[in-house]
Amino acid sequence: MNPIVQCPVCREITDPTETGYECANKHTFDAARQGYVNFLLVQKKNSREPGDNRDMIQSRRRFLDRGPYSKLSDVMKSLPVFSAERSREGHATFSMQAAGKDTTSND
Ligand SMILES: [Zn+2]
Image (cartoon, rainbow, N blue to C red):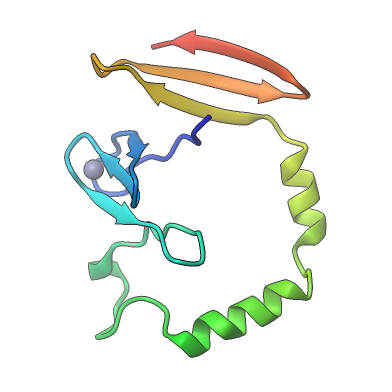
């Protein structure tokens, strides 16, 4: 099951790839080694060195390891999960999974 992720450039649904996500118009977003995908566009980052440096990553990791968002995370885990799969013909199938139930519909 893959989460529905909309391309921030063209609004198409992205598909997961081996390295991150890609939309039908070939806009690509690579996954970081830490396991997240940054969808912020480089030209919108307003920086000569877009992205996070090592100190920023380590600082964020130390902060998150203290669990400041654990209650929010617990609530989010209890919410329904929406996902999309794309067929070979390019049709998207949307699914919602909640409390062990799986409801599927086609576009
Ligand atoms: Zn796109």
